[in-house]
Every structure is written in structure tokens, then in C-alpha cells.
Amino acid sequence: MERKKYILSFPSEIVEIPITHTFMSRFGLWTNILRAKIEPSSGGKLVIELRGEGDMIESAVRYAEAEGVTVRPLEHDVAVSRELCVDCGACVSICPSQALSLDPCTFRLVFEPDKCVVCGSCAEVCPVAAIRVDF
Ligand code: SF4
Ligand code: SF4
Image (cartoon, rainbow, N blue to C red; front, side, top):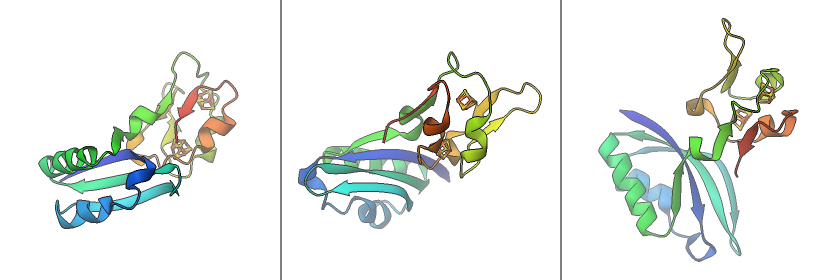
């Protein structure tokens, strides 16, 4: 059993395609929508978590891409710049999913993409703009 998070971007022409339903019914994947921003006129984005067999997750991603959906791993769109980060910890307390923490030995920031729900709060509070959240 694998567990992966992706950001799906839809052009407006295909927002009504039942992508997540197909992930479940055709590929047998446990599918959890973590965040959604859909505008019928301009398309939209979904943050989803998929759980299931690795080959089925890959097949589901290929299916979505064939339908015209851009599929990117979550860590592609949420990133911490080690060059900019000063390990102040301001983002740690505001993160709702404990995806950010300070290493107790090094006091350096640790980002765990598996826990991230792409809320964007960390990017808003970072004093040096070290976090990029594209959603
Ligand atoms: S985007 Fe939200 S959930 Fe993800 S690391 Fe930042 S604060 Fe945490
Ligand atoms: S708020 Fe910014 S500078 Fe501070 S620990 Fe988080 S990413 Fe690093």
C-alpha cells in the first residue's frame, strides 16, 4: 500500500469530468480531497491524497493526464528554500498538520510533504519568503 499526494490542475473545459470518482471506481484507490478551488469559467485545482497499490496510482495519474489534467507531486508546489530559511520557527506553530517542525538536535526546519495539506499559512508568516506554495 502506497500513499501519495498530488496537486491536480484542470482547464475549464474538463472541470465536470469525475476524476476522483474514477480514481476510486476504476483504480480502487482510497481518495481524499484535501483542498479544492474550482471555478467553472477558469478551471481549478485539487489537492488529493491517494492510497493504494503503486501501479494503480501510476495508472490513475496517467488516466488523469490523458484527460487533460496536469498532475504534480505535492512537493513540487510546496517548497522550502534552504538558502533563504533562517530556522526562526515562525511557520512551525501555524502549520495545522505538523508538516513543519524544528529538528530537536540541529534546530533546523524540517518539512514533511506527506503531512502537508497545502493551506498556505506558512508562506504567509515566513519573514524571509523562504516558503513557496503554488495553489
Ligand atoms: S502549506 Fe500549510 S500544511 Fe503545508 S507546510 Fe505550510 S502551513 Fe503546513
Ligand atoms: S518561517 Fe521561514 S525562515 Fe522561519 S523557519 Fe519557517 S521557512 Fe524558515
